[in-house]
Image 1 (tube, rainbow, N blue to C red):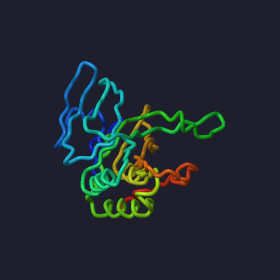
Image 2 (image 1 turned 180 degrees about the vertical axis):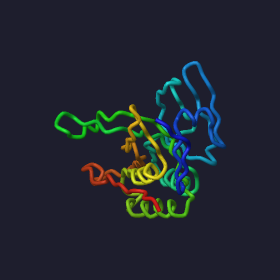
Image 3 (image 1 turned 90 degrees about the vertical axis):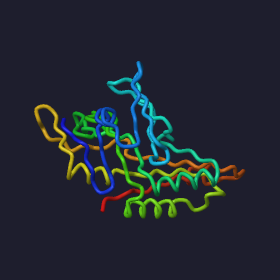
Length: 213
């Protein structure tokens, strides 16, 4: 499989190995016996990457909020929202090859990982910023009175990038159309309301998609 760093209208996908060898501006990599520790400037970047294992060992991103961002008050929510709309957002995602069973049905849970990418989304990009702002306003009806979970889905952005830029091949040099796993990140807000019925009954799970221009 071949792939170089690919920019595409506010989104960039970089193979994990390349990202660690040549970190972008604002990042530095510390090599440890157990793996790597990645440092970044939280004033410039919003990193939403959980610790993970690679061929280089355990990879830890310092100052990362994790793929599921937890907030407990209006002040925390305001800070996260401001970061989403002004910084570069970094998320770890996997390009996979679909696996079919003997009955020719997709076995999504058995999808073979072809490559892991550090995906960067420019939250200040005019169109992406507008989508995030609109999505948050639409999904979050009452920040102070209820708990909620919002999934922000990047699948369509990644599929558009892959269709125009990614050249993924497997032996014997067969071109593969990747399917994306973990192509989202999540905001979780925990209210201290005593009777948060929508949350208790599972009605506070929401989702919106970021789409290509």
